[in-house]
Image (cartoon, rainbow, N blue to C red; front, side, top):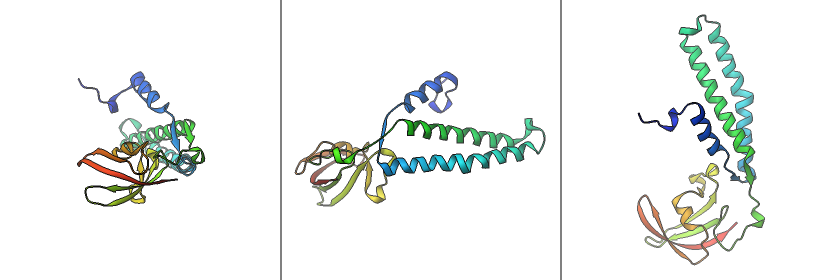
Length: 177
């Protein structure tokens, strides 16, 4: 029998969850504020909605054969898990002080302009924590292949980065905050 992480129960789930949740995560002030607002929304708006759904389902009679009640209880469990994860994330969050970061090389929170040496295209990216990534806005996760390849590089350096499409060569044109 193969046990997938989604099927872990009891102590195995708690150990896996604890290991994942105890990691320090770095955020900008704005990113952490967004997470706090999401948590507030879940606790103030979503919890009462689910409690109401459970109450309505309970009023319909026999709970042993009440699919609506089971669905509401499952939704409650998922919501409480999400709330718990967000609370843990906030407890382990650290805010990045950009003023103390080196601007001569590519680091987390760097704005970097790179040039694809194969086709001459220039791209602007900002390296951000994973939870704040938004490719449409030019914010890429520090855990992405391109960001990992750029970390620690300085202006003028060329870097070969392995991406899903193959090996790409970039030149760092500019680094700023």
